[in-house]
Image 1 (tube, rainbow, N blue to C red):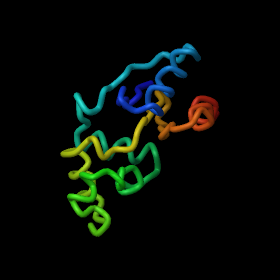
Image 2 (cartoon, helix red, strand yellow):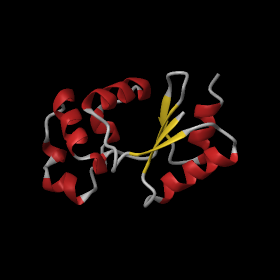
Image 3 (cartoon, one colour):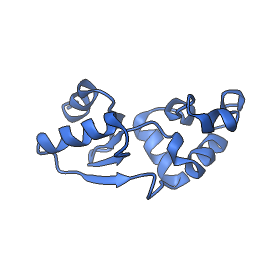
Image 4 (cartoon, helix red, strand yellow):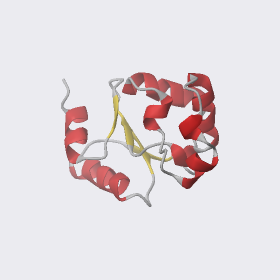
Length: 117
């Protein structure tokens, strides 16, 4: 598994800690330091079964500065915005080796991802 992690975020820290406590083998990707490419964001969106605007932190000052609330929902354009501004990506995202992924802001969401079979 891989977790897109921001150590400054309490939800992200909690998810990373929980993965460790559960003994779940995982890699940590500090996505602000190692931003995902547009192709990687597209791949994760498919695994999440979401659109880019669904994983965008619209309340961030940068989102407001970029006028994202009024940006038409053109998938490629939004993915480009997220690739250029990874701080706008909701976190944490955990990508399971089985091809599924989830935004795991709660222990319940993490448990669902790990036990979905």
